[in-house]
Amino acid sequence: MTRARLWRSAVAVLLVTAAVAPATAAVPRVASYGLCADQMALMLADRDQIVAVSDQATGPLSHYAARAKGLPVTRGSAEEIIASGAQVFLTSDNLNPYTAKALAQTNITVLTLPLANSWADVEDLTRSVARALQQSRRGEAILADMHRRLERLARDKPATLPRVVYYRPDGGGAGRGTFVDIAIEAAGFANLQREIGIDGWRGVPLEKVVLSPPDAFITSYFDTNRRNANFLRRNPVLWGTARLRPTIDVPGKYWNCGTPLLVLAAETMANERKRLFPATPAREARP
Image 1: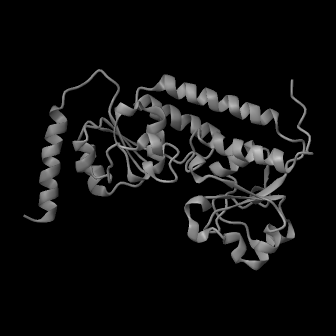
Image 2 (image 1 turned 45 degrees about the horizontal axis):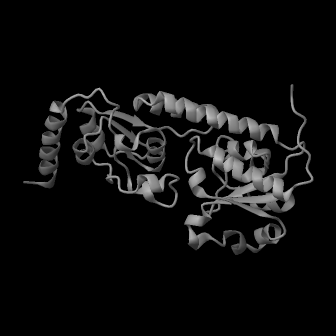
Image 3 (image 1 turned 135 degrees about the vertical axis):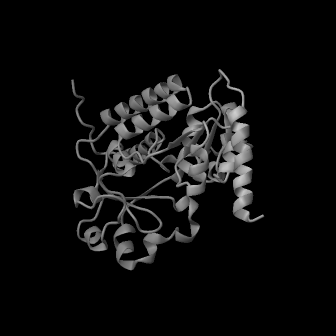
């Protein structure tokens, strides 16, 4: 029997198993695949509601690595998802056509999570996942906490925003239309990349940084990518500017995706802003 026929036979058996599985009045069982999907499942679901996560759930970029420890791990195949007994499948990584086709023949609800690049997007994503997991009350509580913390950050913004530029280990940046940009703004900084009009995840040309240097550099993911830890030092032109200015490093697990965890990244940057630029007065509170 060929490998393809074996695969089809295995899926067929699992489809029958899934079809006859007894319904339950409890919250639906959930499996997740991909770092962003894992974070949303671990944030919103009861732990005993989660039947599988990807191997990224316990990795260095996962904020919930400790909570995910011991949960079954899936590679995102149809066989594994069906066999897990999941009733909801969250994915933030692309599924191969075979998996998508097989899951479409089951009663499993498949949610492919979009990238959330605004606070409104974060709200929509959180609510849609919470509804699917029958955890809307928890979702609303998480969003209410996020908004309280964002409001606190807004009240604490300085009258003059220090200018920063953001770098990843690969040299990429973050401009308008990215979740990193909204976190930088919430932290009380002006994003140089936004100012010069480079949108998305492209980097800022070195000449722009040299000719219009920021007050500080923001870096992230260097804590999980040791080979690129000296990125700012590797280019003598960039290092000539960077070595004279403070660098704020944000743990990658705080903003691996556009989720309510972004507020942790914003708070980290805001605390560093107050430490590095203490003489900058806060804006007057609005009535």
